[in-house]
Image (cartoon, rainbow, N blue to C red; front, top):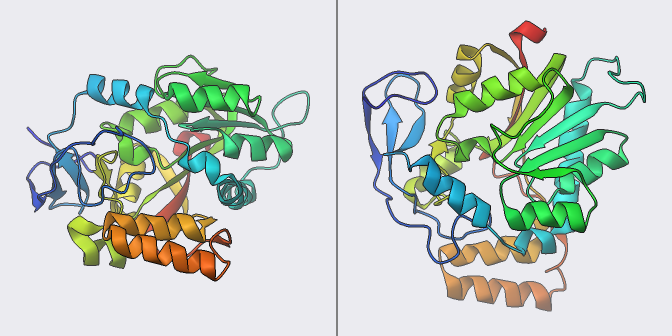
Length: 305
């Protein structure tokens, strides 16, 4: 029987008919295939959570994420690092004061770290930082180009020390997971007492998401879960977590990058906008518009309070 990934209820109902395929680029993080998912989306009548149905097989997702490769985020390094710095500031504001190892450095784990820009920023702030990334391309970039400690592997099974980390990051990750509760259990086991998790994810209950529906830019082949603020809180609390904060989480990219995404709706309009931005000499300017449809959640396992 189909059940809600957030609250566990049955009785999911049809919501959006968006079934399609990932296209020739596969499951990359910078697609503009807006309005397409790997299956139609259903809605939980109990908590409002949305998810694809049926869920794609684990093996299909594992292979696709291992093969995922894109230079787009690499080319947007400045904005990615600025977004990472903002996230780290929020994380650090919720940490308990005592260090946990002989060097005095705090320990951070980034699950799904992609090419590692947040890890690099964390190291510059004095963290001992390690990442796990399934993409062969992205994890190799993190190790070879940024000289980071990044393991290539599955987020939930790669061997890591239990009770070890002060903070765990999952930025734009939980919406990709067929069983998000398993990820929360994994994080709880890896955190030291008092440790926290920070997650960034699309907000399917936002005004933008509800207005655009199937044409929302977060309805893309890589996403299988569509959380609202209420449903991510429900999931966390059911799994034994205390939610400390939920806020919007805009991303910094170049003006050009944002305008190019308009191509998911109108390629011609996107090309015209990019030409105009170049003519106005603002195409490479960093921009972080807050559409209020991406949220950051900070939580702590209750057994670590």
